[in-house]
Each structure stands twice: as structure tokens, then as C-alpha cells.
Image (cartoon, rainbow, N blue to C red; front, side, top):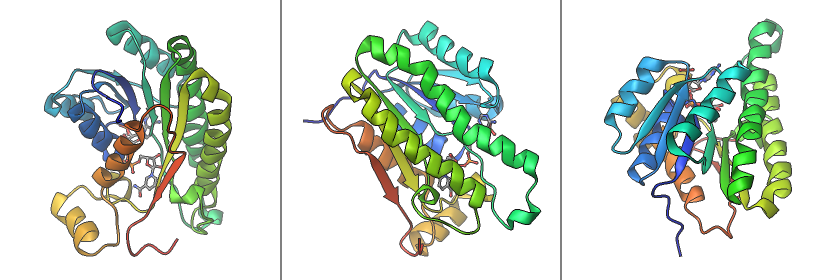
Length: 243
Ligand SMILES: NC(=O)c1ccc[n+]([C@@H]2O[C@H](COP(=O)([O-])OP(=O)(O)OC[C@H]3O[C@@H](n4cnc5c(N)ncnc54)[C@H](OP(=O)(O)O)[C@@H]3O)[C@@H](O)[C@H]2O)c1
């Protein structure tokens, strides 16, 4: 038995590019109604135009509490429910820690951790009232391995794994599943890759990278399991990634 995603209302943060946009394509094709959230309205609108299903475009900065609250409120106003939260927005800093811009690090901690917590906090009351819901958080291999080039980024993704595995148990009785999707290197805008042919070469041909749609396919698998099944986390890496 497969659970049917058709008609489900899904909020996707960080939907303007990369994994978030790929999740939007996969979930829209599966019949979901989507709230597409990020700061880049033009990109969100362009994506919405190409999707087959109903969409709501919302400008939401994960550093702004009011934006996160408005994102949930506008979703409810438009669709009358919130079935799934894909808390995917995130930023990445790596390199020598001594060279880090600590203000940028502070923003990363707030976007990657506080933003995710606030998104979850704002949707949980509605999911509780429905006695059903899914929270899928985009984590990283950096939440499962200590990658030495990213001490601060890795800290945010280890925090995500803790959040997932504690919230999951707090919310299981309310019918809410909490899961994490933890990819290795994904060739997309986060690394400056936007050219489809180059992404195809790096991933499919050379095996050194994943594509955003590979990650989205795993997310679709997790969300489409029957309700008694929680896929706690999926860790996926390109064939030649060492971690
Ligand atoms: N690419 C990888 O190799 C990789 C590997 C493992 C995990 N991840 C994780 O995957 C998630 C998605 O990243 P991606 O790979 O798809 O990279 P991406 O293409 O750079 O996407 C990042 C998304 O986050 C949004 N975002 C950034 N800052 C934001 C803010 N302050 N408020 C709201 N949205 C914000 C961006 O939208 P706007 O700029 O329009 O706001 C964009 O939609 C992140 O959590 C990342 O840590 C990525």
C-alpha cells in the first residue's frame, strides 16, 4: 500500500533553486499543491509557471520570524491545510575557520537551524489539529560525518539530525512524521553549477556528484511511504564521495 500524495498541501522553503526546486517539480508532478518560499520572487514565479499543479508563491526570508509566520498563514488561507513541510532552505560556508566572516556564520546558524525550528514550530499546531503531517528537513552528509572543511556548517547539520530524532519521538503520537534527507555533494547553485550539461557530466557521467533531482526522488519516496512507516533519514552520496 502506498500513501497518496495527490492534493496534499506542501510548503517548500528554499524552493527558488537546487534541491527545493527539484522537490517542487517532483511533488507537483505527484499532485501536491505547493507553497514555494524563498527570497528570490522572480525565480519562484518562473518555477510556478512551469509546474502542472496549484502553487502559491511567498517571499520568505528565514532570518525573519514574521516572514515564516506569514508563509504558514498564507498557505492556510489559500489551501486550508498544511500537510507537509519541506524545511529545505539553507546556506553553506566552508574553508579555513580562521578566515570565516563570523557575521555570515551567525546568519548561517540562524537560517540552517533557527529557521528550521521556527518553520516546524509554526506548522506543528495545524498538523496536530489534523492528527497528521510530515516534516522533511534537508540535512546533509555533514550531519552524519565530521567533514573537516566545514566546522560551522557541519554543526548546523548535526543540530538538524538531533532535532529530527527528538521531534520525531515527541510528535509520533500526534500522527506527525519527522524525517531528514541527507545528501552528499549535489551539483547545483550552492556550488555555482547551473548548466544542465555540466551537471549531467559531473554526476551521471563521472559519478562525483548527485543531481538535485536525485535528492528530490528520495524525498518523494520518503513522503509517499504508508503512514505507519517513517523513513528516519536517507543518507545518499555520489558514488565517488569518500565520506
Ligand atoms: N548542494 C549540496 O551539495 C548540498 C549537500 C547537502 C545538503 N544540502 C542542503 O540542501 C539545502 C538546499 O540547498 P541546495 O543544495 O538546493 O542549494 P541552493 O540551490 O543554493 O538553494 C538554497 C535555497 O535556500 C534559499 N535560501 C538561502 N538563504 C535563505 C534565506 N535567508 N531565507 C530563505 N531562503 C533562503 C535560497 O533561496 P533564495 O536565495 O531565493 O532566498 C535557495 O532556494 C540546504 O539546506 C543545503 O544545506 C546541499
